[in-house]
Amino acid sequence: MSRFYFHVQAEGQVVLDHEGTDLPDLSAAQCEAMESAREVLADAIKRGKSKVATAFVIADEAGRALAIVPLLAVLPRKN
Image 1: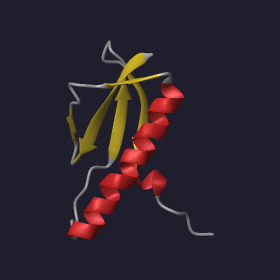
Image 2: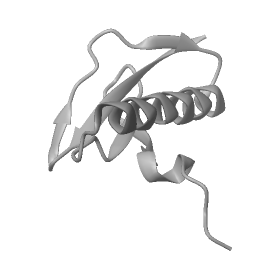
Image 3: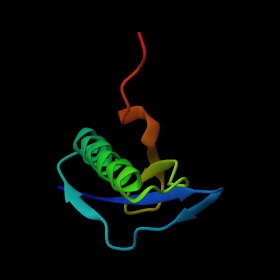
């Protein structure tokens, strides 16, 4: 298990996750970020928010950014 941190990117700033989450690998961390993105967007829609975070920045324990998961990546695409 490794500890991954899910920093929130919003309006040009990054809000740091100081707790982190233990997960088996980066793939699991990306899945966790996608699920969280769905929850954030669903909550924003329910509350009528026009501004929401733009992405999760997944970082390791050393603070290195490993992946960026845009919240829009969870929305259905037009065909």
